Image 1 (cartoon, rainbow, N blue to C red):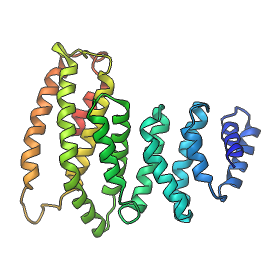
Image 2 (cartoon, rainbow, N blue to C red):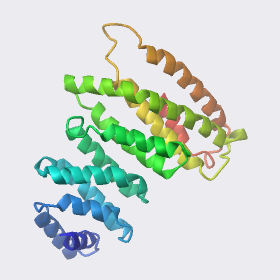
Image 3 (cartoon, rainbow, N blue to C red):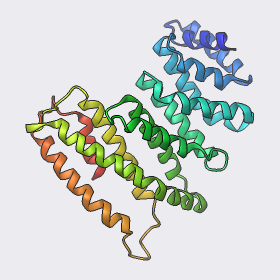
Length: 276
């Protein structure tokens, strides 16, 4: 299975129309076989495979999880969920990491909370371990992107029971995510330096972490509370968080406006727009 699947993925990247056609037929023949998705994940996580094959494996896995997840055995589901959470922060390529993170989000939409109760405890544990050292870290960025994908999937569910469950989950996540947002905001403002010029080579990575924190906070605040159209009452956490967020935005904006378009990380501007 593994060798044939790897060969089919590599052939799919060929410039030959005939080779690509044959690879598609091979992939379709392999889809129903046990271990298909697990083998795709193994290829995506390999370090000695070509970047194109690894990214294609990630894309195929993402679509395969949406298409075949309900038909998998409990053993393979458990293996995939465990491997994805264990290995995601070590993925070296952004493209592969994005597709694997989206895959985790799609699985969470189906399995959380009933069949994946350990998802958020493990994510927050990993996030705590990485952020204790530095927020300017690829592993922190990876885990935050997974958190963003999962939150986005769960927030989009519309059944009343799912919305209520997400509101309860938000109350648990907001303190931790808010703390990370505040820390990253301070570091982003400091990294821009006097006059808005980035003060270090890690300014872009730090800005990306800040942007992900802003995205997570946005979803938690927008979808994590009951609508106030009937009660006309502002939740106490909004009264605390919103004024502080505006102050943070003011400080970061003051630093950002002094930077040239070439020197300021674009993620800083995207983060400010996301907050607004």
